[in-house]
Length: 464
Image (cartoon, rainbow, N blue to C red; front, side):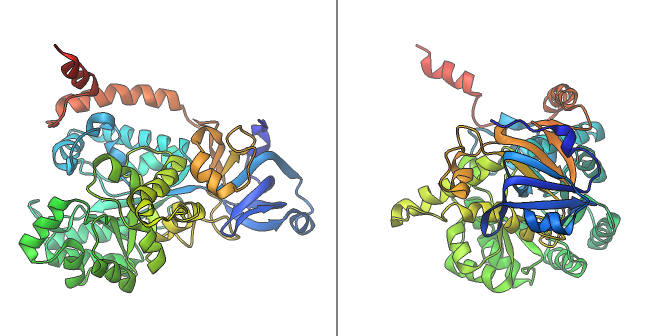
């Protein structure tokens, strides 16, 4: 396995990087390189051409490595990282019993620590962007922005704009939303977004108002939609329409909307998504761990529906996410129809990078190795036993890639992680601090679990 010299990659640049291949949308491009300057890809193309056009730059050779775009997590909850295994083995809608009380127990310090811990895990897993759906902690959301910025990860930062059962009048909700959208203008890493927890958490007037503000600002609105059977049935009882149909009826669908999960969709709802340009976050690990169904992502791809891949805070590992995305489609749909390809590998890499960036409103900024876009990228060691004998790099990255093969993570042209550890701050110290604060937060929270821990369950099952 090839060892790189970190010193050659550190520093302000510009840099002419020459890996074995560059992963562009069309596939791995052998003999290509990139010029990174001022946080962006200044040029991407054949090495000979780059050397002719940039004679003052000495090439930095990266043998045994592929340069690929960083993963973009289209759905996360950064301040839920203290919960971890508390949600394992639990039935659906755990947000009511676990996440709401846990986030409610966070103060500014613990919310910051939880968010930065989640950002560190994401960087270690190859994510260069995370999309936070809004915290329920009673803190200024700028705490989360600071954590992401300090960790060195790009963040689409949601502000929760619910107005039902919150004692907040609609004008105050919309005023706060407007201020949030203006707050991060010019920020290099933080992009503001609005959020509504679930459609029933906001009045129709609030849903319309928030959607309009986001559309006017070129931002996204994140809403958990059609995730669980209980939510669909509540919407039918309350509105006579399913959640996605309700959003369409009140005029909230459109390119500004990012529908999280969307696992339970009718053919009509697929048509609504396609016709309105609404985006979806396909969260396959969340479906396996606590869902009622797997989103029909292959059908979305066929219909031209915009979608990205999200972790929902389950685990911050981009390679395991794309593996889960393909695997879930194969189990849920491919086996029954005899589809042994299920997206042919490249589909999931595409939607975990460029597709996710588009879905969260950053398609013109990141998600692709292309001239003019932000230099958010990974250096992946392909000389390992898992990838060295490659016949099909995209497929093998999906099924055999893992975060241990990520040598370096760059965000905005700056190295943020080297062999799993932050380059400018103390990662192990943060983990130790998080362990202490997590214990205190969980003790304060009124969390209700249906099942025992795995050790307790084992003891009960083996008891005489």
